[in-house]
Image (cartoon, rainbow, N blue to C red; front, side, top):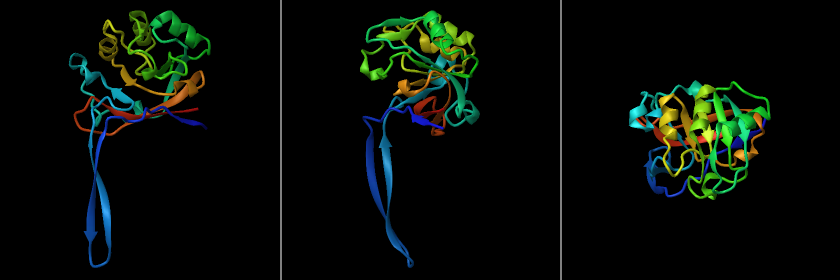
Length: 206
């Protein structure tokens, strides 16, 4: 079995290290604790539908069923689009999936950018159009890992996905390392209470 880490490194994180002396009649040592400061879009992050107030389904990081995030069978679609390529359509996704003959998993991984990662292109210069979003919903995917989502025009990609119960994983890296076809994908967020967007560890097995 091969395990591939798809998690983008953190940046812009405030970390304060605090040494804590601990003493007793039996031992003495210094523990270390940390205070962290970062926003919810650091690293690779998960968007539950409640990330948009109008599509909030009540699922939070501390209540999301683990069985919907752990070792989910995922269909992998590889494209290889350049910077400023524009829209990805339903036909492109269908052709990409048909090429490997897989369908019917609860999760979908879209590697639209080939060996590039999301921050290697101009922001939102490659995106899912309305037909692609409708196709994802028609295939009954519930978890979407993709290196592209919204356009500069704000088409409502996330709102439409969330309104149909699709959870999104944003800013994955190295999706090109996955084989086409079927893998198992896991997204592991900390169970922070009341939170609908937060960093997660993302990895795939095949």
